[in-house]
Image 1 (cartoon, rainbow, N blue to C red):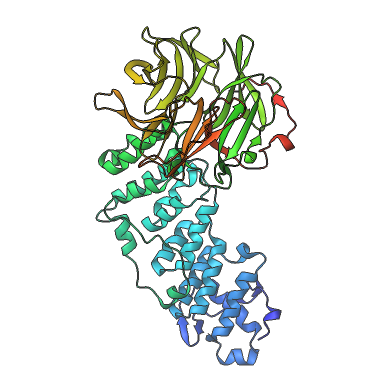
Image 2: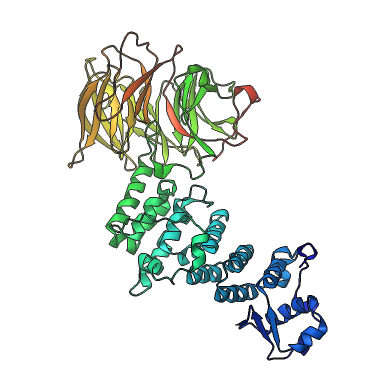
Length: 586
């Protein structure tokens, strides 16, 4: 049969369809097919195009098609330029059932390949449930791929609820899953768990186990499945841990923490609580856990940022090198005279620049420096936490709360407590901002904690060493401080809510003007404005395998990390217009 002369057939090609006998029988390789009259008519039309009238009349009641002829008939589906006009979901499912009964692998493969062409939000449930019933791994893979490709919104969350635990887990884990926000993923997980909870005597694992015996074709249509499941934990907690729950909004997390399933599942409650704590304790110069990384790693890059005088430089930490030439310059802002501080708020970079007796705050947004706010005085200590950028003004003895996306931008001012004098450094730890203050002795400093968002002040006692240039960093489980004399201490919160500092190790003995530190791939990177010569730095026991010390020839302010978009809008000095746009954006 000439495949090059293939043609599409549909029921409208048959003018005599209405005159067909109601008992017309279709056979494939001698096996009777139970088909509807409409589909039988379509096959009849196809068959008569390839059979003489005399031959047809001899067997007018029975149409017996060979396997090759039926393959060609299925090919008409694939080659039909107006596919949806001629082949409804009911027809496709009917053919699928027919070839499944035949148990001919090649026919099944052709049919299931075409199934993928009709997968849509309207037909997804029907196709997925049928594929699970038939144990069609090929169609299941197409169904999961459809969900991953589709930009999931709140209106389509119900599609996730029909998935088996294994399939849902594989989708939640996928780095390229398209969703408008991680809130949708978390809400979908609880929606799935609610449906599971309502099914009496069933669970996600048992659903996966209640399947038909595998057919012969299964081994010929491989599909990557999530086979490594933790049977000792609940499906809800496993799905939550597989998500990027650190990207969800604090409002969504707080709402889900009150969900009745979360209240009953201690492990799920622990995950949500961990996410809430992370959102309230985002350390802008420390550790970014995997659950807070963007899903598509190609769209964002983890970078480190330093500023010296009036310029801001960025370094990609994904391919970290100790080559100073790998730093790239941000576009220059003409109003940056002396940058005194950097901070990250809502994953955007903010700089504070001093001009005379005032300071200007800018945000780097849409490849431009956008003006945010001007403040009296200068030489502030700046740190972001929760809903505000906190500006610690030692001259006026006040803490200013800046909300860049609201009006007014300067929300409030908090007076220092009597116990707090001469602030020098500030770090973000747990639920508090730790403020290190100098004393009459250079060998001793005081530590004051400001709880957020309550704005409660607590005296944390004394700390050996200078309060100047104290920097913080974290690994996955703990938070540490590094002082200018090289002392590393772990920060702990005791059961009585007090703060304690446990000395670990001293890396050097000189006084170093530190501006930042972080751990990346078991290496402790330290940034300073002080050269450190003829000193061999080792790793920190139980913390890092070695220490890399970076020295800036020009004085730099604080080092920060954040995720920067890597799309076409990202520009540096060599391809920028060196422009700045003054805006009061909320």
